[in-house]
Amino acid sequence: MRPAAVRGHLDALILAVLEDGPRHGYAIIEALQARSGGALDLPTGTVYPALRRLERAALLSGSWSSVGGRDRRTYTLTRAGRHMLARQRAEWAEFTTVVDAVLRPAGGAA
View 1 (tube, helix red, strand yellow):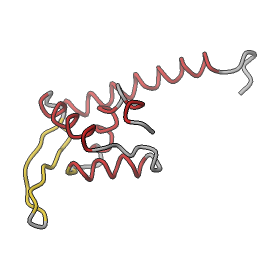
View 2 (tube, rainbow, N blue to C red):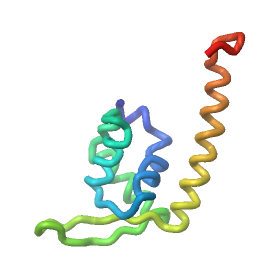
View 3 (cartoon, rainbow, N blue to C red):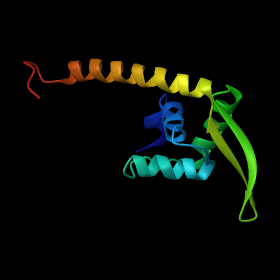
View 4 (cartoon, rainbow, N blue to C red):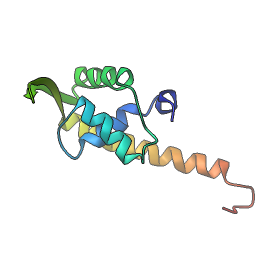
């Protein structure tokens, strides 16, 4: 799946994978890929700017740590991030219901 295909949804996807607990940037990319069955193979140039944006918006908090001699920034979902995730899930559910109703073949057949 192309990175452009997730435009508008990347923030919710990142918040969702951080719901389980803190992760560093590359682990977030791996979690997105694993939870999507490999469909989301997003480049660092797509994910890292989103992480910085979410941190500036106080939806994530970040802290530096050293892992195996490498400095890594670990991100944690904030209370505001949890509220945003809940709101985005509700909006997604409404959106998919509406789109499904429109795309369903006439006569209601699945």
